[in-house]
Each structure stands twice: as C-alpha cells, then as structure tokens.
Image 1 (cartoon, rainbow, N blue to C red):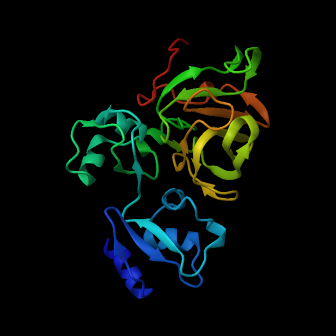
Image 2: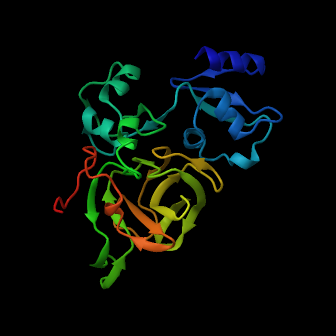
Length: 266
C-alpha cells in the first residue's frame, strides 16, 4: 500500500480511492510492463481490471484501474460455499476472508467479491511439470466422441472441464503466449508455447494476456466462458507435443485434490 502511494505521489498523480482499486492517469512514457512492476500487480490482473485498454497503445491521460493488491472482482452466477470459491482460485478460504472480513461461509449469487489472484499456490505448482488450468469436473474426455452440437463422431482434441462463467484460468506450464484472440470453433483462445509443447485454452470469456508475454506455471491468464462452438460454460484444454495432440490427463497431476475427475480409474 505505501509503495503504491509513494510511487503515485512521485509521479504527481491524482489518486481516487475506490473499494479495492485506485484510478491512475497514464503519464508520458508509461507502459503496461512498467506499471505492473511499479505497482507489483501482474499484467494479466491489470488487463482484467481494464478490459477496454490495449496494453500496447496506452494514451496519456487515459484512466486505468489499479487494484491495491493483486486480485480480481468475481461475481458467482449461483450461490456457492466459501470453500468452493477458494478452490476455483486455488487459494485458502482464509485468504478471501482476510480481505473480505464480512464474508461468511457461503457466497450469494451475483454478489461481487474481491478475490486475491495472481499465481496458483506453489504447493500445487510443485506437484508436476504441468498444473491443472482450472478447478472443475471433466465433462468430455480426449478422443473419439459424439459431438454435442454437430451430432456426429468426431475426434475431441482435448478435455472439457466444466466451470462457471468467469472462473479464473491459469497457465498449465511456463512459456510464451503464441496466440491470444478469436479462433472459429475455439472462440476466445490462448495458445502458450512451452518449447516442444503447446497448451490451448478455449471458449474464454476474457483474455488477459497478449502475444509475446512470458507467463510462468500457475499464472492467472484468463477467465472461462462459453464463446465459439460451445454448449455451456467450460474450459476446453489441449496439450500438443511437437504439434501432435496428446491426452492432457496424462500430463496433469493426479494427486491435485483441487480438481475433481469424472473418471478415477487407471
């Protein structure tokens, strides 16, 4: 907090306090990278707070919302327990109540709440080379299936993980963003290159990275959605090795208790 205020005063910025953020007016020479560094807020979090701002085209005098700590506003589409909300963010419930002291054991539908976010807890990122990109149940597995929309047998190039609209999505492995935008049936899509491997994150409601951005394993990168060819909110997740499709489950940790699997065999 002091660091943010000190920086703002040095820059001679008029700060207007909101509940969880300040309003910052862009100065000459500002870049998203510098603002991220100076305010200690990850670029994807800044992008989430400023969805109409193009990071590569900041304009002097433009107003940006800067959260006081790394976190995002989340509005559940239906009521859920505090424990479940914490699992969607891969954090402990105490981290939510620490910044929201009036929050109880359940969260009402459409109640907006500030939730700390940035990177998946290191206790989970250390489990395996890849981490689960979201918390949820696998609703459609890798391989041949009857397509739910086209109604014919088609090869499913990844897995579908059922999650509510707007659930945070995390990078399964460290790498560089190769693609971030709309892509036909995928809807809003992020492709991360990991050097020999690539991961795909599709049907997103919000993309919070840009091409060329370096992300680390467990970094917050997007929000889940229902864009493209989709029957409901979920994350379509793919793993490719040298451009060849792989079963993502083979690369993800099976001991991650924050992820529920429909099929528990093997």
